[in-house]
Length: 167
Figure (cartoon, rainbow, N blue to C red):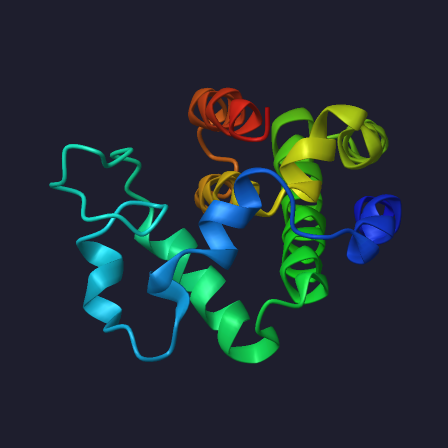
């Protein structure tokens, strides 16, 4: 909850910087573009085999942009809402992972709250192009919580992988 409340003010933000190329001018978001293009194009909508391609291959991230476009068009609030909700999910998963590792409700609560409101996450939550970072972390932490805390070393490795995804 703290993570969501901290970043609710981003819902009124617009589309800026890299968000323009990833959303406003990306032809892969348009309804008449074949879905298969998401798997043959880079993050910015260019053919992945083209010499000018950025070579950043994130089809699931672009798919979320496309679904957002179908629901909200170019209205930025929908895109920001997805990022804020994903941040909330990441915060819950992080606190769960901490509880599995530390076995202390108090320590995991404090760690989860600090994680939720730490300013280092501002860009990851505010910038629309960073949705991939949150999505990667959700998958990583879900895998860790699914392990049930049986292997603490694996959970620590997941935390060390997951935290840089938001930086």
